Image (tube, rainbow, N blue to C red; front, side, top):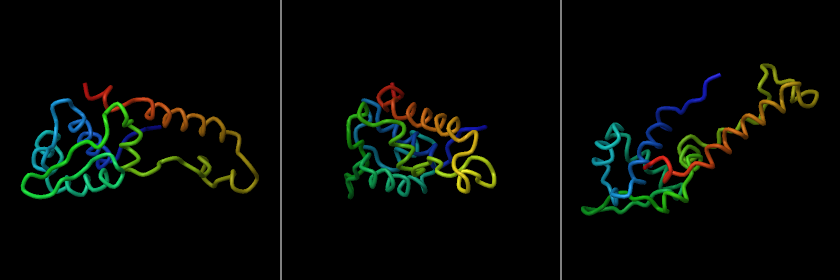
Length: 133
């Protein structure tokens, strides 16, 4: 079993880490692209998701740019991933054919759902501040 981000999720984490660094301040889309390796054409769309999630604020105009909306210690990796990827919690049976839907929980239901919650709990417990240093 593999656990990985989509390319968009990867880019979201990279940009948030760049903005979370103590010396980051406000960054233009071009500067973010350069600092993170995110294609310049994708930065505005990506940042739109982060602005809508309340993780980033955007200042428009000649002196505009993006900056982190809250202290990095108050933003978890889960906040970032969910802002970009959405809520990835599985709500259906992990077995193909979905026996959980027909006759109650299947034999592996509890084990897989505990593992899922452990993963999400782990991401929620790590702040940007911890990983941006």
